[in-house]
Amino acid sequence: MQKAFSEAERNAIYRAIIERRDMRHFVSGDIAPEIMQRLIDAALHAPSVGFMQPWRIVRITSQTLRERLYEAVERERLLTADALCARRDAFMKLKVEGMRDCAEVLVMALMNGRDAHIFGRRTLPEMDLASVACAIQNMWLAARAEGIGMGWVSLFDPAEIAQLLDMPEGARPVAILCVGHVERFYDAPMLETETWAARRTIEECVFENQWPR
Image (cartoon, rainbow, N blue to C red; front, top):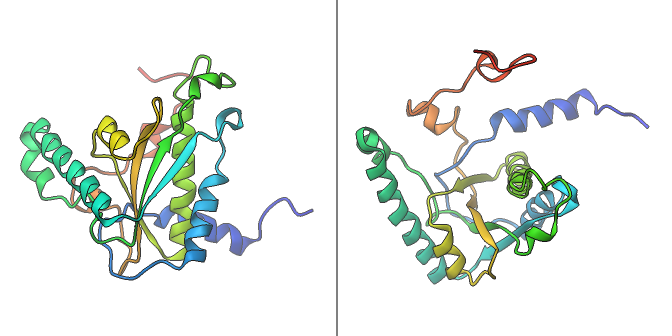
């Protein structure tokens, strides 16, 4: 069995990684059911600590509920702006979500009953969150390969969203995902284009043997 992928397959994977974008601008049009199924299947094939598979996905099909989620995000957007003080005005100019325009809204959540899973979590309980992040990344890369945009919205009060979605005690929303067609993918991350932040270099992020002083 060939271990490595072909050069074309490798290039496609690296292209999806490099060209993945946090999208906030969407155009109209439903996503074909078979594509949505592939995206969700990609999420469900993510790695998870102790194979606990802590992800749960709530698909929002109610327009009323979508609007209530949007209102919750908008409230937190204003509170975040106030907390940014000197950068408030710059933040308010940013488009931080596309919830009213995208074809699909999904809420990615941590399941309840996670305390029963101690494999890999005895000293690092946050590994359940890391596992959900892997599921989101899988979906994001699959979406880019399908030519579908996806955006991660994290501006919300988790308790409020949990109550809106009638989540059981112990479950916790992690992300509101906007999924839909886009006119074009951003050439670079939007926050980089807007000079909010810049991508860090290898030297800033990779150390050898110990943390540099």
